[in-house]
Image (tube, rainbow, N blue to C red):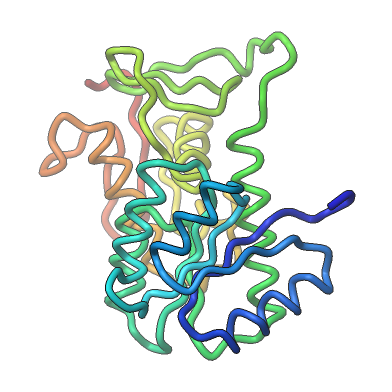
Length: 241
């Protein structure tokens, strides 16, 4: 659709929920696809890859957490998990397997649209092609044994292969490299990554840091690149690894 705000794939086994979300997002300029199961989701992806997948955790044979892992391993899309109200465990696991955001049922459609817009903005920035010659500020930055390619918005491992990052993980890593040897609080990190949709004391930032460490640190038991500063936040120390 010309002038579309983007495409959202809605994966939920409740047709009334799918229709409600599709109608609301459609009214605000989004193209929508619908799927009632993991199989239907894969069929939809074979026809068109969306910008964002809105994924209910409580599906049938394949739950949303399994499907989130499947998506993160194969597609560069934004993932928003839909969880039951107060179900912190599902939210934590969802973030650990690579979801970009979550929202709890029942939700206000306006909040859902705000989260879709936020994830889509970060995902598009992460995947934007580098048409121009990179400036000095966009040259690759060594991060331990890896390299952060700012021009291409990607992280390369020691072997030159791309290391998969979610859009939020990329934003966090970029902020750290811009503020070496500085202690950054969780609130500063949320502000710097334009992710103020989270609650001020949301510990999900810690989960993102843990995922980054698994991809960057020789030892996650004693992290050296991204260090925890007790009661203060985190500090990136370049030149380690």
